[in-house]
Image 1 (cartoon, helix red, strand yellow):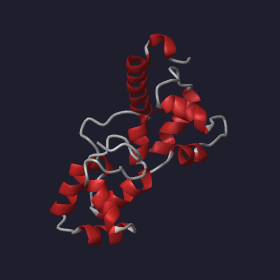
Image 2 (cartoon, one colour; image 1 turned 180 degrees about the vertical axis):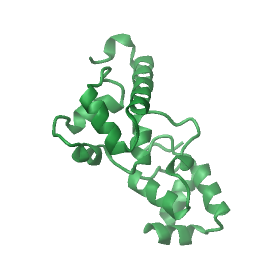
Image 3 (cartoon, helix red, strand yellow; image 1 turned 90 degrees about the vertical axis):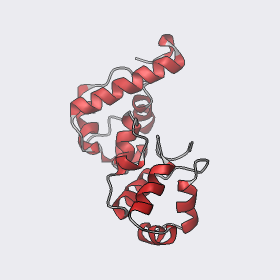
Image 4 (spheres, rainbow, N blue to C red; image 1 turned 180 degrees about the horizontal axis):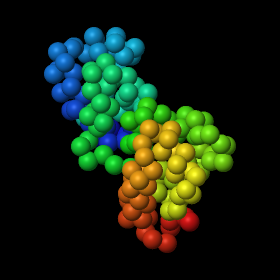
Length: 157
């Protein structure tokens, strides 16, 4: 599966959405403002995943929600951020205060930071266009995934 770009990218979902929309790769590429080769690469199971911004543009061109281009079981803050079309730095730049750095946000998103301050949770949820409870549920998923990968003693407080 693809590795750079948005998490849980599903090349088959893009292919299916494109063919259901009766678009060839060239037309979709033109609508999104990328090359036909990029579309072909995104549709390959050994290809790359698009950036969050391109994910949103592909979805818009296909008249589909961005989440439909991801694996059905896609979870976590990185998925919420990708569906919003934002990179980590873009998300941090949109926060109302400068209390959170990109590395600090990355630690939250990867589950290394176990406890999320209430003010950060509210601000991040607002930028992502979701509610606090959804954000906290996805963060808990990330913490659990990190703990499973790294072992309980490695998680930062």
